[in-house]
Image 1 (cartoon, rainbow, N blue to C red):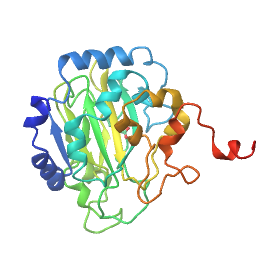
Image 2: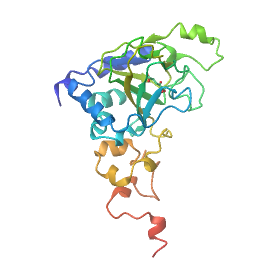
Image 3: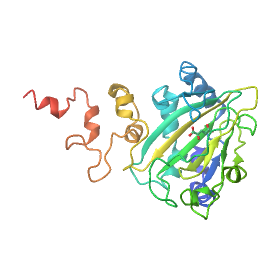
Length: 277
Ligand SMILES: O=C(O)CCC(=O)C(=O)O
């Protein structure tokens, strides 16, 4: 175990998440890793501009990030992060989304939202996913820092009299996460937040990995997005996070077998193999 991991107080960070909905790991990336992240992203930036106000018309996103460069494989299974997630999600939890987000100058603030809002279950409730947003550039109130409403993870559904429902009232509660480059914001999927407006002259680069309960449907369909031969070369922990695992006793099975079998060299889906017998 390296020193950073040994020193990491996952319980203290978990307590912050329980109390206010989020925590910050200030030294998540060192300078060398930030450089590798930039290098890994460089070939793909400028490939996907937002198609709507939510993605952000002046925002560039690189989806399926974990399969774009080796550095992102390691960051999705970073031991401090997994130790923290282990305190909230059930064993066998999945990666649900992995993307970079570059908010360019002139971008407007996103709509207020939660990251697990598409699991349409009544609130207040435990979060079904957890979001990690890593600052590659320093985040400031001017350049589009993620803005969060502390404590909003405890709120009920919209319309609940115990939460503010007026947009201006909610906006007044937003706190910009001004964090240094390399810091990771970890928040419950129930926290109300948004990407801020970028009123500076420079882009704000970040990436996000999000994780969900093992029984929940991930946002990205990694089985279709990442070729099996590429998954085969990934660390086993990452293969599990991508869905090549079962949630006991058998959720996620492949024709009554463990899905890891589908990564074996020469594996043929039983529906094909048995047809050709
Ligand atoms: O980029 C950010 O700071 C947050 C973006 C976000 O919340 C989202 O796209 O869902």
